Length: 274
Image 1 (cartoon, rainbow, N blue to C red):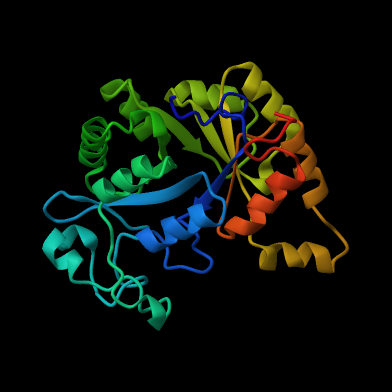
Image 2 (cartoon, rainbow, N blue to C red):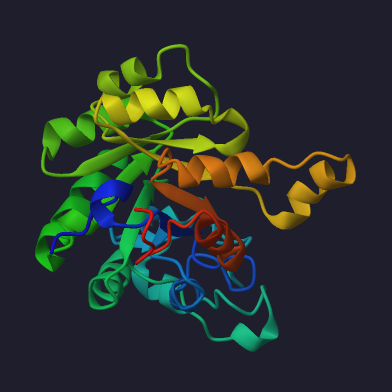
């Protein structure tokens, strides 16, 4: 059975671990992905850049400084040099020895564990090469159906479809556009990523009627606490929107938390309301 990111086809609203279970595990690593699945995620969001020798690796920043014990731009380091870096010890000593994974390793994991992958192209200097390399890996690993290629760069997304029409794409937005469907049509995207504060149920209805999917990113509980302390709570509306079938994927750093929202709405796998 093909993997589907559309909730009504999948029989569930997807729970997406943002960079894996990044709240409690080193982001964009295999331990974070495995922990996300164990905590209830059905998809993970990953970030992709290229090494000096053109290998697609999973890294959010253009440099390795923030998340590893190394220094410098990934684009200036070979895969062999990247492999020598520790991507876990800076997060917590318990994760010492964790490596930056390649995209190929993540795709093999996703296929073996029946997980979906939301793959963001972060590569800035050679984005088209990154896209071509990822597309080749998706075909080689038989994972085209379980991956969505996403980007803030909507012009790049349009080129993705022109070069690789068999891939699915998602446009990231940080605003409520007056013509959201027009935005997606302009870059030939299949889906849109929306921040919770910019989500509107009317937009979601229009998207579904036009054949598009959506992914809504939810802040961590410590961020939402600012609302709660002020006597405001966005969660009842969010749970209702999920229950009403308006959201296809809920994304966040705290996987058990967003999984709880989906379960509360009766939209987890196997729930009778889907």
